[in-house]
Amino acid sequence: MFENLSERLERSFKILKGEGKITDINIAETLKDIRRALLDADVSYKVAKDFCDRVKEKAIGQQVLTAVRPQQMMVKIVHDELAEFMGSSSTDINVKGRPGIVLVAGLNGSGKTTFSGKLALHLKSKRGMKVLLAACDTFRPAAIQQLMTLGEQIGVPVYTEEGEKDPIRIAQHAVARARSEGYSVVVVDTAGRLSVDQELMDEISALHKAVEPTETLFVVDAMTGQDAVATAHAFNDRLDFDGVVLTKLDGDTRGGAALSIKAVVGKPIKFVSTGEKMEALDVFHPERIADRILGMGDVVSLVEKAQEQYDEQQARELKRKLARDQFTLEDFYNQIQQVKKMGNIKDLAGMIPGVDKAIKDVDIDNDTAFKATEAIILSMTPYEKQHPEAINGSRRRRIADGSGTSLQEVNKLLKQFEGTRKMMKMAATGGLAQRLKGFRR
Image 1 (cartoon, rainbow, N blue to C red):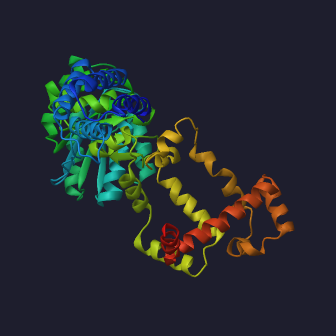
Image 2: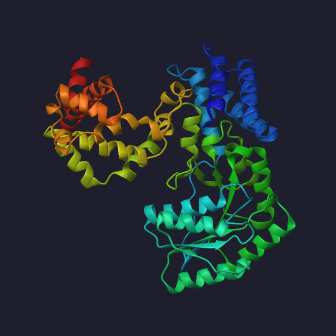
């Protein structure tokens, strides 16, 4: 995500390396390079120009402290402006009401129906809401069946009316059902078209007027760049939606849509979808995205993802086992499953400062990253998982044969596990901090 833009901006900042202060002369070349980087990222010329003008206005005459180099000062200014252009801070959706109604609009192929399912899961699992999905896309073949499949997958009911072609009637009846059965929120999936046309705008406007949603979200495909911005602008002129959802952001290495929509349309980005799994939906945080664009990582989001998978009781139990040296291969296997639930491994690693650049050309697939490790552990007996010290030479050969791996791979895993267990025990008991403190001395 944003790899190309990150590299281009990094090169732009190097122009100021070694300079004693920011001047009209040295900043001109830097801003010229930044503008080119933004244009290559599919940011519109006007937005790119406005951005650079604001950066220049803040940079010229900036008092550069002795401890801060001009290059560092420019990174700080660009970071703040990037966050400001993308909306400054995250914006929540309004699901208040009896029930709250979220209307989801967008073109065909933008990921609208999938997002509806992801949002339902987000509201159910993270906010504890009772959610009802309303299948109001009567235009696209199989759209209703797709939503029903997603609803079954995430455990959220879907309201449908077989044979009914009027989306307004379906939506109104869904809201009535939700009100009578005590649902907290209704997520209404609407019909799209291949392009913005009068029929689509009339239908979505009539549906919006009929159900009076508390929140209207417009879904756009981030990979379409400026086309996504233009489409959002056209919809907003007619519908006046509350926020934007960017889908397929994991496949977009340029990021022009994310950088332009707020500046052009004036509406905040509220969610970003970064994968196929139903859990792959994140609240949009402009400052964190700015951090990632400038290679600073996103540790806060990484910690939040970890917290979603662990409760306090699990954490206490794990700490107790580590302190008593009772961490087993079975616990190790369970930790791997928790990590996999957090999302794509490469995306998670990219949230650590400095790692994103190091692994940008590395292909990491969740399904294969832990495949050999999982196979080896699953080929062990329950006793061996609980007592790894008992795994002798003959047991190792049997485990290698049973898992379809080599003896070297089994030996490597057991060695890594032992090292991991020692390190985790030190961290849990405070020994690691003491050792690092002694090292610094």
